[in-house]
Image (cartoon, rainbow, N blue to C red):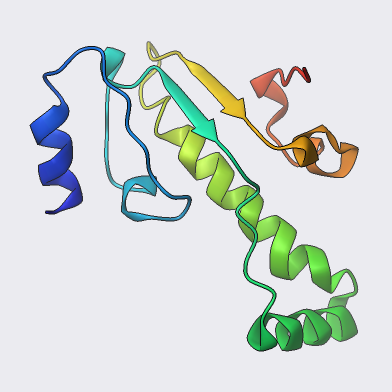
Amino acid sequence: MTAKGSVADISDVTPSVGFAVLGGVFSEGIDLLGDKLIGVFVATLGLAPHDEFHQVLKERLDARYGNGHDYTYTYPSMQKIIQAAGRLIRAPEDSGVVELVDVRYGWMKVRALLPKWWGVKIN
């Protein structure tokens, strides 16, 4: 089933909840305007795996720019999170809630990378 096909199948059902993976097929190119989507839950930071490729990339970025960990893991993860939240707000009249469900969102380093206009509240 294609992403657009599966959205078309459920788009007339209200209310509905959808689950997707960060960086997956639903992270781009799907518009659920109005009340079709009223919330997004992000249950992890979605970091890249700690494998040999990413370790080499981290070391090279660290040697070239410093802060290789952030360039390899943190920044790509934050981009995926912001894209996931972007499914919620597609038009000026759209609104909803983004729930960031991971203790690491409370870390100042991570919060500083989130858009300021989100008005993040830590519970």
